[in-house]
Length: 321
Ligand code: DGY
Image 1 (cartoon, protein in one colour):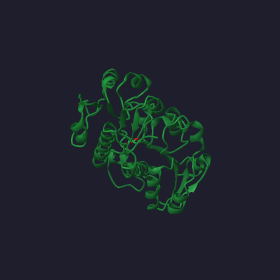
Image 2 (cartoon, rainbow, N blue to C red; image 1 turned 30 degrees about the vertical axis):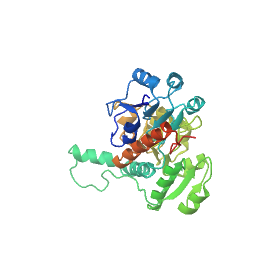
Image 3 (cartoon, rainbow, N blue to C red; image 1 turned 180 degrees about the vertical axis):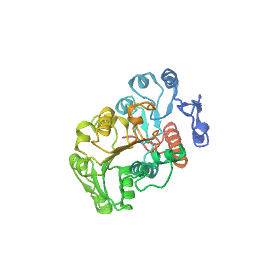
Image 4 (cartoon, rainbow, N blue to C red; image 1 turned 120 degrees about the horizontal axis):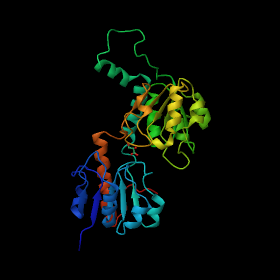
């Protein structure tokens, strides 16, 4: 009997993928930072029983239609907006993601980005490295306080809750907006459910953690930025497409809001000469929300377990419903 064939679209740790090498022919795109070209991915998918994909791979109708043997796509991310899940389902292809294991790591990064933006940490670090530091100054690189301020979390899923938990340690007032209220979170963390508009108007830090859907696409647009405080800082650690970047740029240069911390962008990688990246009041990171080596290795292992389970005729651990 021929072994199943698995294509891994980016260089991952072979150690974590061990369960796959035991049951299948595994081929891995050898680059860590350069994605597998689309044409090649289509070719590999056409004969694959399973794909281990990255959030930068577009797994659409065209790919799925031509992947006649495909049984499972395991995405190395909690988000899966890069995959046409309903079409995959219609073709009997199971889609898996990596929830839970990245929650705390992503919340750490999100809260760290909030702190870095509020306290101008990247600007300050560059100041020292560029030898600009002449003397201690009373208002040198003075930022904004975080403690005792109001954080407004849009998207109170697991990562949102973990960010809220961190905010309690800073004695922050916590507002959130979510499709559904979460009474437990309100009781445990003292968070208050408010309308989107109320959250925008009342928050010192507006933190976006909502998944990308048709409903949330460009939710942060000129109308939203207009409703925020002039001193507000906007943090995005979900997906770039929930923001209209041209509107964000205008809000930042016109002083409609005071700063932004961005881990995600509409087009990744964003060019260093993109107008947003040129702004001093923007802290930009290269989509590293879940990037601790412990968590990324655990995510690889979970993807491998999910694929092995499906190919062995068992239930995957984390299926996208
Ligand atoms: C995810 O897993 O969806 C995150 O964006 C990774 O950082």
